[in-house]
Length: 72
Image 1 (cartoon, rainbow, N blue to C red):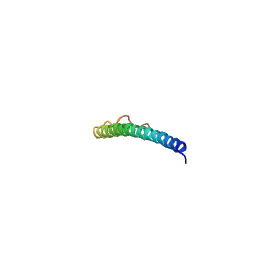
Image 2: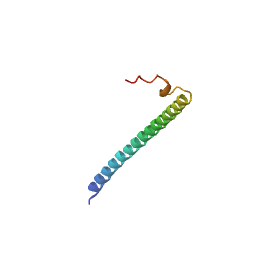
Image 3: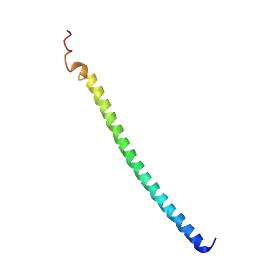
Image 4: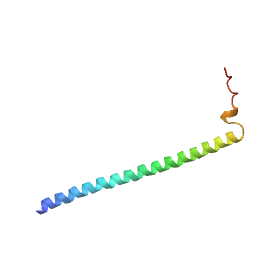
């Protein structure tokens, strides 16, 4: 393999490496965003669960909201 072909191969490998590094950085960024969104959603679910429990404990649940419908 002559030096020109070797130089071309090295350049190609450097380009591929640069693309892989960019992809890895992008994946890390997206993973961080997803982790943050997941944390926020878990907090919201926890709040909703606690809110529902409070409503059920203090008579604000669905059972006491309306009288039962008449039976025919």
